[in-house]
Image 1 (tube, rainbow, N blue to C red):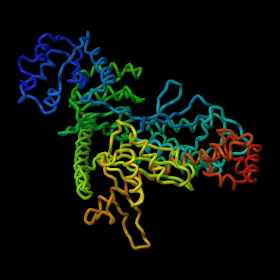
Image 2 (image 1 turned 60 degrees about the vertical axis):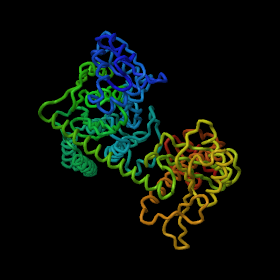
Image 3 (image 1 turned 90 degrees about the vertical axis):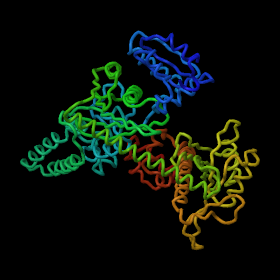
Image 4 (image 1 turned 135 degrees about the horizontal axis):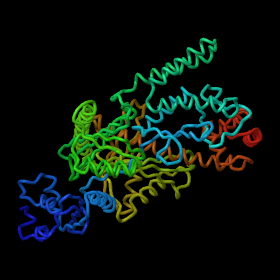
Length: 608
């Protein structure tokens, strides 16, 4: 038996009375925290597998068993009830050794408002039962933006996303740029517009070859009756569709929507790979990495499927898996309840579906290898950085940067890198409240005070400030005032002085007059520069947002007839108050939502 659990152990005594039926078990540590939740068809048999002799346990199980102080069981009537209960308990306790799939808000779909006489496309993060058509989800935000851009360029649907299309006397600039059919003011019939919408639907459903033949027939028909302008427009659309088809990868011939899932496992990290197939075309591949979990193989796939499809807005009709799952039937039923129609979970044995799972396995293996290599490379880089800076560790690095123009709307951004990767959940933005004018010391004092002023504040290994010796002196003085001097190391990064012939930025440390020597290890300096640039970008984006709000409040707020929507339209189109001021009344009037009276009011107010 394990050294912590002898034959007389209370855990083993309790095990003898555990039910042999289905249910859920909760493992707790000495502090009473739930560290693992599992389910079993036979509770007694499953729990008994944790308390085998040490030489029969794998490393993950051994690590968990050492921390178990007590376990509890909940008996259920069926395996399906155990599956549901396990999911609810994991959400409630978020145990350390379970797979916890983080909320992923990057999934995006395209929404087509077909109930409108003149439908329009928009990006949606949530699929609702509102009568609209949804396409996706797409593998990334970039993929959905590229698709939307292509559709707008090729099919010229209206861009204004108002439910009621307001009639205008003249079209906006988008029509003049040949990027919109302008149904708001042109005589475009609902039937004519709907025909183009039908083509967009075919395109988004992946039926591009069918659409190409349709457009080719329309082009030939237009040429026969000598409608050469229409034929030329259809020709351009045909070329765009053919170019798109060349970039698409067809993986099945049944035009079905399915996901393909596979697992790859390493010593410390496991990976689930998801191939997204829509209408027979491979849209993208996603990878989900997990560390420090107890589950593997089919159990990992089961947990992933349950958590992922409970949160995602789209459940495909078919999920192909590369590992056997005991509860596949129950999972199918649960997903069917979510989708509202039958969902199949299949482990294929032959044909093109087997080829898909093999492709997913190879993708998972390759990505895990890249991930492990990158982690090893990052660990080596951080070890070298700690040696060069003569500090204990550099695993967590924070960087602070201030942003202001003439001391107005002063803000700071703090970015965090852990294990050489940005940890955006820990990024922080600060609106400076106490400093007046461009007072970097006051801003530094406020930011560090708000960041480290709490008793339970976690400290980084390294804090980097944007600037040289002066900024380092300020940071050290603030840390001393807060009583946290020595809790972390401080460095400053100063830009190169090209006038003095400098070719690289410089890193300074407290008490040293000369910058740190990175000769032969320039990659470390480039890494620190990358963090500084990210902090600068983050702070600057916040400052622009603050300035934009200030500009709205100070200039446009008091113009009669200019409300929130018109203000947003003006700034989004022109980009600045200066450009709005330079615009003519006709240019202002051409914008969606504007009229002659409001355009004249803006022009007169900004000209005075």
